[in-house]
Amino acid sequence: MIERNPVLNVICHLILIAGALMVCAPLYFAFVAGSHTGAEMAQVPQPMLPGSSFVDNLVTAWEKADFGRAFVNTLIVTMVIVVGKIVLSILAGFAVTYFRFPFRMTAFWLIFMSLMLPVEVRIVPTYEAVADVAGPLRWFLDVTGLSALINWTTGIEINAGLDFSMIDTYAGLTLPLIASATAVFLFRQFFLTVPDDLCEASKLDGAGPIKFLFDVVLPLSVPNIAALAIILFVFGWNQYLWPLLFTTKTEMTTAIIALKGLLPGPDDPSDWWSYAMAASFIVMLPPTVVILTLQRWFARGLVDAGK
Amino acid sequence: MPASINPAHQGGRLAAPSLPASRLLLARMLRDDGTGLKKAHYTQTWLAGLLLSPQLLILLFFFFIPSFKALSLAFVQVDPFGGREIFVGLQNFVDLFSDPSYRKSAWLTLWFTIVQNIATLGIAGVLAFATDQIIRGQVGYRSVLLLPYAIAPVISGGIWAYLFNPAIGPAASALHAMGVPWDPNLRPSDALILITISAVWKHICYDYIFLAAAMLAVPQSLREAAAIDGAGPLERFRTISLPLIAPVVMYLFIINMVYGLFDTFSIIDAVTAGGPAGSTSTLVYKVYQDGFIMMNLGSSAAQSIVLMVLAVLFTVLQFRAMDRKVNYQV
Image (tube, rainbow over all chains, first blue to last red; front, side, top):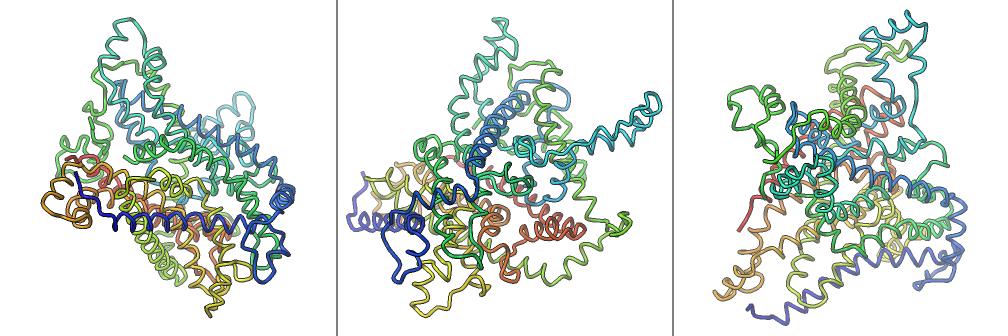
């Protein structure tokens, strides 16, 4: 048993209270700003207690930034990212741990390499890739002479047909994001801890790999899936760079981008701050609720995903 | 842990160490010595290919081809009228490194990432230590301290931009009352301080979760033994906990570097947009501005390559650190 030191105990509580204040004070002052009108905030001294205009500010912000549509978009995008990433990662992780096939390590390394370069370092070429998805295919047909061949035999100008852009589509907002090396590693790591007996037993019973995946592996993976889903939900909801690059129309925008549009610049009237702060609380509400209610799973998942 | 997830170890012992690095990498990529393969496994190649294909197709189209293009663009210049590409060798890089605004951006990024990193680790470390010492209220404190994880960087940036807004922000008016001429829209150092605070505030929770988990994992028996030998709480922390959590600290140091380099893009875009006068335009923000806004493709591609080298370096370091963390067992 370790001795208790009451002085240290008090100091530690004080440190933690200071930490909690450090987190809460900015949120509190933001809430005060969001619950007063711009004129009230311009008074000297500034009000220190929440006012009564939060809902009014929110309504104004909601109309100004078309948040209704933005929330629907964010919800769709987030759900596709969460489900897509988990499904693709489980399949890939299952394939590299439970199958022996030629180039197994090559596939593993190709996925591993994608971990190395975040989107931020290859903005321009990635934009081109999304704006012209069929570009590589056209190039391939040209180089191999297939397009000329098709043109000569059938008279169809195949290159003209192979031109589509994923800018301002849900596919463009989600598809490039759902490949994930981290999640593949997480599942691979977990699959390696599943006892070998289970697979042997399932083979003896005459079950194929797909049946084994659905009946044995998936039920065992539920805690991992849940933890990952929480992290991915926050990740998807808070996406910024991706929708910034790949949406040009306001009806395809996400809640975070809409909120960014509300933040006033140096020359904008300062009562915009009240709208922006009120809207901030609504935009941060869904991920906050998820994190707080599922805290236990979340902290575990984060530490596991980092391993 | 049944297997190290660091693939650098796989096949490393198979290939002769004297082989050139490129062949070593290729040998590792192609050779299958059964690492990370279940003892009971299947052999249907077509099914494995089918299961892997969605992941690999997405990577091909949105990762490998764009990355390859970024590489090839860095060595050419596009003729603005004819649209022809002229191979110019390393000229883009020479131009880049002799550009004073790029060098300024590099120094600024270094300053920002290091300060942000040390501040985040320091504050998170103190909070995790305090959480480890107390008995009651751990869950309550933790819930509050976790909160910024859920908050988007843009919102964190927006809130701090409001607090320190020279016209209306409460923190700024407190500073003005103390005689500080605070104005992040005009004074470069103020803008840099503002994004640093915002980035640190958003990231403390991440380090805190890892450090608190690591401290919790320090065996109670070791602490008791030290306590019996007469070591006080701080002494115990220094001699028992700190060496045991050192690998986690190292790991977080690298993660924080990556965060500072790449993930603070949205904070900067929301708070200062790189201004005033480029004083908060970090390397990542500059790639975006030069390539996407200004359409200077050659320079932006060369900048991308510099960042890619940094990203690869940090990924390798991260895996090294992760490996130590996983293997460190008492």
